[in-house]
Image (cartoon, rainbow, N blue to C red; front, side):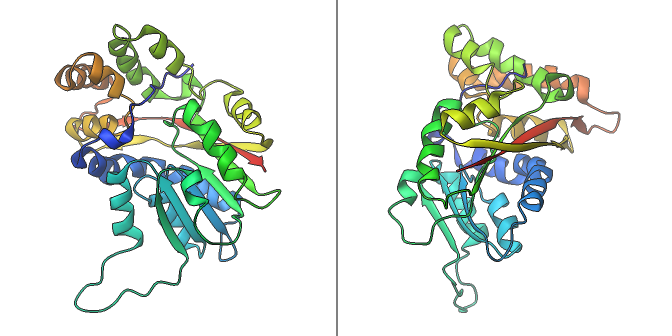
Length: 279
């Protein structure tokens, strides 16, 4: 199975790491976002809830298709960047008009439930690094905010043999293990197995209704960008806590050397899988 690491609460991230996610790493998932929006025909009649919306790129893409979007995320730093993208401050004395079609809420779906609005018609949880233990209660809460029969989309890593980044993530698993071997072992099976997404959906009371695979290569202009981007995911937090960030970055560079090209760029081919479930 492709190993992914359980993350520490994202509220502990620095502003720099949140910006690294927004400016370097998040764009790697654009093919996944596009595929999901296309498959669900996201458009002007869509009322979309994004769980773990991060810095808001997927919401911005849905909004560009005409959807009304609501995003929630516990990471205040990422959410602040989402506000800059989706709810910019007025400039040059010109007020920004708001049509009430964009909302950003700190926390999770339970925090969204206190806001006004019609039931959602689409729910997405597209961050493949979110821990299973966080997702199940979040999906249950989100299902209560959606129309019956609405699609709920979950994302995870594809087959291990088609995810080059999985081999790099083993560095995090190895470094995290001395501190908490049980947690590291449990995290290694996070949403990477053949039926992991289906099992998660059923645990959340949802009905699986189709799936798809999307190629999402991770490409970086140089080694420094690759390290910063991967560390920004939070998948190396447990390793940093068990050792230190300098050690993690050093070993990450060594693992990435196999994917460094002659021109200095770094590229890893990956396939991500998504599941469409129904409320």
